[in-house]
Length: 458
Ligand code: GDG
Image 1: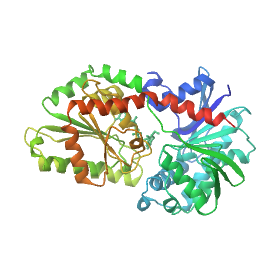
Image 2: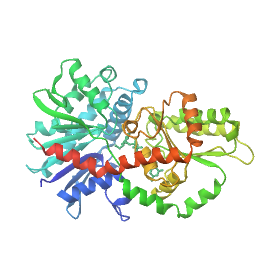
Image 3: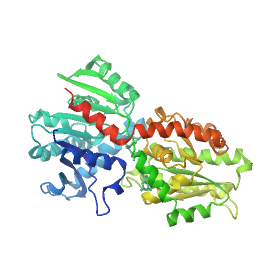
């Protein structure tokens, strides 16, 4: 079997607690690498200041080699915080209003991709297959091709792909489309993202779709498909069952005794719809006085990308909003919203999912959303909770037993919350069983295997 090389902006190097602590995606990729032997290359997360980064730091772990590079401070600011997080991320999440174009940032994005290609090149052998992840590294295959590499190269996009009218607002959209056309296989989260990509390619005659999922553009034939990412379902379910005994989870259970728990878990990101969700929770309480003092909404929101101004502003906005709602509807013995603005450990998270009667997952736009899948996997089969899920998350295409909502519709989300909280046991069980069966069958190992099998096929 050919060796696998994975390239992603950040690399999940197993720490002394073992790989499992890193979460489903890292575990699946590490398993795929261990099976075939291989290399995982990416940015170390560190800056080399204003001097050229040292050569790659290689760490061997069994038959896996982790290859890390630093980036200069200018590249961290322009490539990562600038173009990746202030242009591609907002555009792919349909936030044209938040995209900040700058020539320096765009140039840095392509420069860093060339730098990655040059650092990777000495490690690549002719039979290796190369799997590139996410929006930071779209031009990587084009750079490798220019250097003469003929390897099979695949790309998986973890975030949504927008329609042409949105993408084309980006000044370098043609270069980005050209970059994607250099891969052999493009993986998207859903068929809607794939359709959007095909629409972008055809709109200005940049390429053609010869048959469904088979494209030609810029003199290269390639394929595209929908590969919805999963979680380690069975392992996470067992993990959540055990986590119920964790001391922090027991304390949490005691502290909500007699009240229903609603849980939200999101990186602090404007795409996750956190402020709209808090509005919906407040509306739910206002419209349903019977639930006043009878529910607790726990929102766990680790800080994310705080160097980017929009994220810093949001941090203040969410804290202020949660405080305002607590002030407006709370009582001396009831804090309606518990807001935690930092990361909590994975076992505690799993136990809290299981404790919650409703999982409230309402992104304004999301490639997939693994929280929705983890919430389902963590439930007690005898007494499962209800998933309230945004129709704009990729996961909504799969999790048919969820109560689907439009997160922009505050009343609609408030009504779904009421329906979820009051849902009879039989209906909860039936909805949950269907979703769980789907997640067991379509777990992250299957996602990984399917993509790699298709990438290997000529
Ligand atoms: C991108 C795409 C796509 C969150 N808070 C804590 C914590 N988490 C973990 C969750 C989950 C992960 O972070 C978040 O994954 P999501 O999928 O929900 O969202 P993104 O980070 O935006 O991921 C997304 C994904 O890539 C995979 O393709 O689904 O659409 O945007 O695993 O559990 N984990 C711990 N403490 C926390 O406080 N331990």
